[in-house]
Amino acid sequence: MKILALDQARHGGWAVFDYEKKKLLQYGVWNFDNKNYEFPKAVAKIEALVDELIHTYGIGAVFIEDIQMRKNAQSFKALAQLQGVLVNLFVKNEYLYDIIPPSKWQNYCGARGRTEKERKSGLTAVTEGRASKILSLQYVANRYGLITDNDNLSDAICLGSYAIDNITIWRSEE
Image 1 (tube, rainbow, N blue to C red):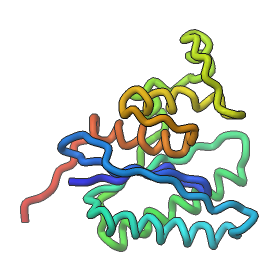
Image 2 (image 1 turned 60 degrees about the horizontal axis):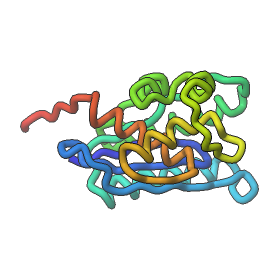
Image 3 (image 1 turned 90 degrees about the horizontal axis):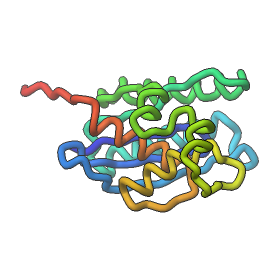
């Protein structure tokens, strides 16, 4: 079975895995910036892209990252709307899905409490303005040999890694 893992937002990432072989197969990113896409249009584009990925790769289950309230209530509201649209897509098409709390995959990949861990680990690589994402990028480089500076991509891959290693998918035999 193939699974799809998503780091969903205007700037997002996706990763397709072979669930049984625990192998990363394909991955990519999208960018629907606010300069060129009003938010409702970006959401519609993301929904269509996710549906296309599901069909293109024959996806059996989708895993998305849960949202969490941080400092910006507007961002939280926008992410909640996007999550609702995606869940609606999954439910109306009877796609198997789960929503993973960020703390679950971050703990699994060693990417939680990043600032303190980065200082203690002595990591010297810095990603322009996003030092808090270094450990997710580092995990992807170490496990899959994929060097990227795109933390949306690395977060999607980390989420998928957590799913293939920690979530049991039961399929009924009809």
